[in-house]
Image (cartoon, rainbow, N blue to C red):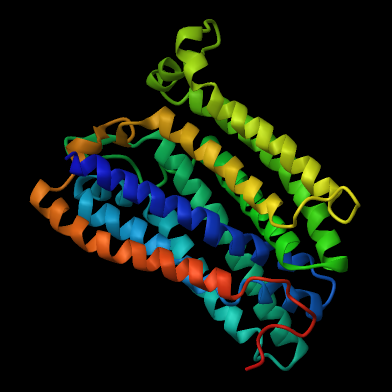
Length: 347
């Protein structure tokens, strides 16, 4: 049994679950800045109130799993991205406080402050996550088994591009979630936000894909694409991944544009299609970087803990992960349905 590979898969699943679930409520947080009234903003936040804090469980699982299962990777990656990680955590904490305090604010200036904190906390957390992703894909300078780069090595045009891309992607997730959970005027606004965000995501998807090919020659070799050559023997077996993303994006654009018309599909489908678009990008990233866990210095097996430790932790994960998945599914099922005016926090 290849325990390092199993743990790499589990951590990849935890990160993807975090992106899809907490990315959605971060997107709603960013879109709340565009609400035309407190009632509309409250309806937006009511769609995520039952689930937003539980969504962050997956971030803990991903980070904790990396620390426990791949200590060398954790020891190299964390010093390289300390600053954006700290900014992200501070933004998530401030956002969580604002989420609760905005309901308690009585005076208008205080209410505006906490509403702004909720929006900017969501935006900052999303952008920081994108910057961390960009720094990870670009790789880290190492000396032996330690990070040897500078404190600002994470800051580059590529990481800024991925930061903007993640923000656009989360806004798209949030807009499609609002399409699912609301109706009437707010749903119509969510449809417009979704189409704009989808256009931005499509552009960012193309730019990041092209930029990733230039990160390291091994990525270019994996895909068989360069500025001067095209290796169809390598490209064709992998082509279903980007093609799936393109087809799902086209289907999503058609679905969103038909919301509110006689030809509209079910309200849940835009969100599901957005999940598919994200998965295609995530799989493409995995294809580009596998088997590197610290690109392009250490692979999965070089960074893993001992097999006895991985096996013991796998027993615990085998117990806890099904519980977390069942609880998550139960909560989403329990609060399934449209949000109505007046729903939300009443404490």
